[in-house]
Figure 1 (cartoon, rainbow, N blue to C red):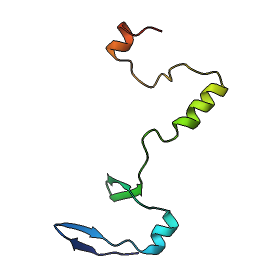
Figure 2: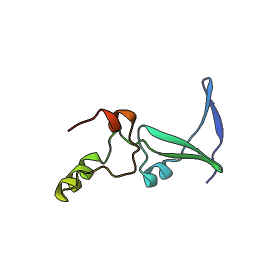
Figure 3: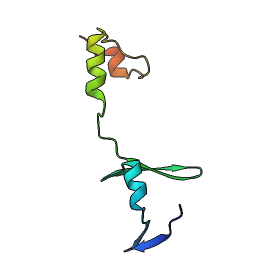
Figure 4: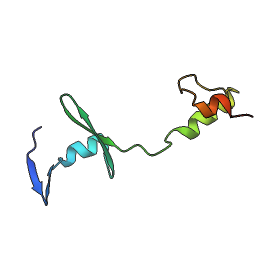
Length: 82
């Protein structure tokens, strides 16, 4: 499906056909990401999205250790104590 870039005030934009919006379930605020072949448009991710489920899973598995993927800061290494 093709679309035309149009003038919107001092900016430019595109009109996204209703059928594409309905099928993609994109609504409200979106994230734009530049890719080599173009621009990816997707629903904006809310801050801390998925955290509740992750913490619930951790609690069920009695897993409260660091994942090893997050590098420790100088504060973490020297000053933090439980």
